[in-house]
Structures are given as structure tokens and as C-alpha cells.
Length: 523
Image 1 (tube, rainbow, N blue to C red):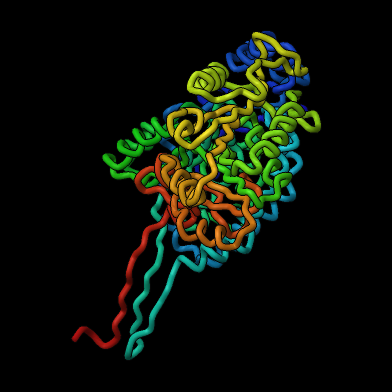
Image 2: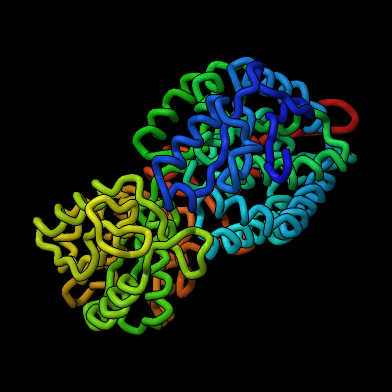
């Protein structure tokens, strides 16, 4: 189809089409922003089969076959058939496959970036995000750490030995989120390295980059390694969690979504005998102390503006020491004012359209009613940055909130906000303030990430001793960045549910087993 990328489903090692030939098509985000209604009408007609995508013009990038119920069931059955053979593949061979996936991801980086941009992710974020996932999930540091956790043996007398090992759970289903589908699908694929068979559903809203990355990066590596067919299955379709919960073939489900729906899903999964691996909401805190590098701290805090705050692992609120609060706020207001909308293929753009804009303005209004002061933001914007009552974008907002007591009563601080909103809490100076701030951080109901900007080594020691909530704690480093060896996902509280912790999927989709071998018979 000329330069169009048209992907069937991938089930049991074969291309599979919808029985009626139905596809979900990708119309570029630029086309939607330039002329919304005609672009959406074109997508509707393409998906309905009324327009030939080869004749639709450059706004159409490609499409993915829509999966029906039969295809979804076939994928689970294929995975179940493949799982036992794949589990017998040596850990060393699976780790080599992981390293090769990382290498191929680097080779295919630029073409995946182009598809991410077409689907709406800003170019300035798409490439670095893929780079971080490669470094964090497929680097030798991460792979070797996970391998070190997979088995420990102790020799006993007369040639016997005792082993504690992690063995694969079986069939793992992955439900990546629409706001970060491709990197989370690649993260989901790491369950393969534990010896599991995997089914990944690409969201209908943004399926192309995800499907392309899996088909052009992961699938060829598995095929070159001689992996059994069915070990990875890739579908585009509506949510399949009900089917996964009911299926006798499914062992684990990686669920990404809101905390409310996610915890409801957790209960259903446990009742169905499935292991839920949750990646839910975040309400991350950044603490900036009196001796902090303010320029570096401000750069980290304004990661809040990435994708207009519609990703989980970004700062959601700040606690600023009163001695440096004004200077920090000046930097944040300037950064917010200089952050403009634009088309995702343009350099310098980090904002994206906000899906829940009304909630953004409601959060601001509620905080102001409670006593916060709005220092910047509070308007809708068109793609060119002009204020508008109907714009798809919102202006990054900075709030000043005086005192921890007011912060505790303000939902914009205590709950997750999914927009470019920065509440900055300025507590009153008093003896024991740092300990009170640590208590405030640890009382967060969510538990994804926390970060601190402080030079005093005694305070750094207090942080590492006392802040045990959350999946990641950063000190004097980017809040959102992924680093080799450290977990990219996972957390406690409303982020990870009752089983929540730092999440290496290679470990979370396995279970511990003790093996005792005694030579010469029992005595």
C-alpha cells in the first residue's frame, strides 16, 4: 500500500486479519489540529471502509487490523501453547534476547519516533523517552540485576543442594495506556525475558507506533532466536480485561489506568485467581531545600509540563523551603510563561492537548477558593499559543500555597492532577521543619516517585532512611528520568495497589519456588 504501514494482528506467529477486513487507521495529529472536523471525519470513513487509505492523502500514516473476540481468544490459546516450551529456554538465552531487543530498538529508534509524532507525542519527548526505556529496561545493568534475583543455590552434604528460584507465571496479558502506549508495551514485553508468553493489546486510539515497535523490534529478535510461535501475540482492539479475567489460560494481567478503576480491577483479578500488576495514578512530590541548586531543581520540576502533565511519573506538587521559595517561584513562572503549544513535529514543543481540561480549571478554582494564589496560567490556548475559549491546550499553571496545613486540605496538592498544574507549597520556618516535610511526603496516599533537592548530607541520610513509600526516590536528579538498574515503574499505595512495589516486570511476572535435592535418599 505505497508507504502506508498496514499491520494485521500477530497471533501464533502469523498475520491475522479481521474477518470483515476492518482496520483502525492513524490520521496525523497535525492534520487533526490544523482542521479537526474534516480530519476526524476522514478517520471515521477510513475505519468504516468507505475510503481507500491509499487514496486518502498524506494525513493517513497507516492502520492496524481490528481484533474481534475470536482473534482475542486465539491469541490467549496460542500463548498458552507456547508458554511451557518457552519457559524451558535457558535464562542466559532469554537475557541475550533482551540485549538484542535493546540493540534493535536503537536501530529502529528514528522510525518509531516518526510514528509517535504522527500519533501526537511531541518530537522533543518521543526520542528521549525511547532512549530511556532502552537504557532502563534492556541495559546490561538492569538485565544482570534481574538475572541475579532469579536463582540462588546452597550446596548441602553428599552432593545435595537447595535452590530458591523464580519461575515464570505462564501467560501475561498487557494493557498499555493510551497516553504512553509504545514505551509501556515495550516494558510489557520484558515479561518474555522471565519465560512467560505474552499478549499485548495496542489501544485503538494510538495503535500504530506500538504495533510497529513490537513487530519491527521484538518479533524479529524472537524469530531469529527460534522462539516458539505464540510466545508473543499483538492485537489492536477494545479493552479485553473481562476476557482475560475469564480465561483459564491467563495468569497475570498488567493493568494501567486510574487508581479508582485499577483498584476495582485488582479486586476482580484476585477473585478470578489472576495476579494483577498495577500501574495506576501518581501524585509525585518534589522537595526543594534551602541549599538546593535552584536552576537544576526548577528544570526538574517543569518536567510537569511534559505532555501537558498527562503522564504519571512527573512532579505533581512541590514543597519549597521558605528561604528560597520566592526565587524558585520566579523561575517556575518564567518557565511556564515560556512553554507554548505547537504541532508535535515542531522543535521545542512539549505541550499536548488536554483531555480533561475542565478538571484542570476546576482544580485551580478550588485551590484559589481555599486560599492559594494563582501566579500564572488558567487559560485555554490554541495551537499557536493565543488564548481561546475553545482551544485544545491549556496554559501551564503555577499556584502558591502557604503552609502545610492548607496543603493538606487542598485536593490539587493531595490528589493526582492530570494536567500542567504546579502547586508550590511554602511552609513556615520552624524547628523540625524537615522532619515535618518528610512526614508530609510519606503520608501521600499515592506512591510512585518522590524527589529531593538538598545538599546537606545529614538531610540526605534522613531521606534515604525515612522515605520508604513509593517506587523511586531521587535526590538531586531529574524527577522523571529513567536510569539503568533502577525500576522504571511501580509503587505503593494508590499507585500499585496492595501488592505494589518497585516494578521490574521480569520479576513481578514470576513466583518464588524452593527446590530441595538430597542425594542418597531421605533419612
